[in-house]
Length: 281
Image (cartoon, rainbow, N blue to C red):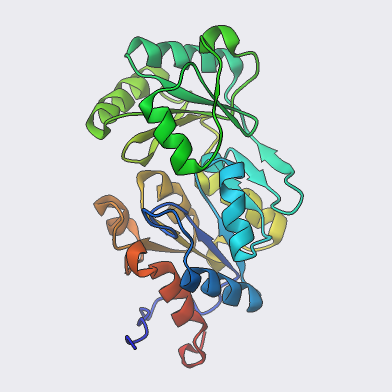
């Protein structure tokens, strides 16, 4: 049996909450929550530690993972735009993109030749089905509604917009959008081929802050896990930050500790080490 993970000396001894990104942090390319990770989450909760999923995904896409792991703590979805109660399905916090700003954004993206996903409430809409949107639906395991011209169709403020494309092309688009919408939009990549657009009030850190206030824990009592650009605010918010070894270089450099990669269920390994009797934590 492999040796238990050794935690660094500065790892906190009093942890009241664990906050973890989902894709490429807690689950890998097969999109499955494996037994070791599910068991570690259960053990953490049994020890009185809150476990909060903090993700860019839709709530309806996250809910099966919450059920699989038996997580009833509030979930942060849509990069922090929504905080949902897994038991009731009720949204306790919902920050949308103002309607006219959303229309301006859609027009700018479409002028660039990109199609996008539009989320209203907890539903996904596209102008037409494309290979990219079809792949996204399979990845998220959710249905998509096609509505034709998005600008003509959109009548309610969306929760977020997502552009799907080749990573380098999205990097260029992101820079141009930041020039046009500086301070008016949250713009960040969740995965290399997903560019996320939301209200500037939105971030994973802000969403987790809302949960912390509701559940009664502080940043200093929180350990956060992440891998990507959109996890930076999450890791910065938490008192102690952990990057999985497969994380982007900038995220690894920013973290307090780098744990084994998602393929080795690094989050579970940290939790196991944290809860081990000999750890004294």
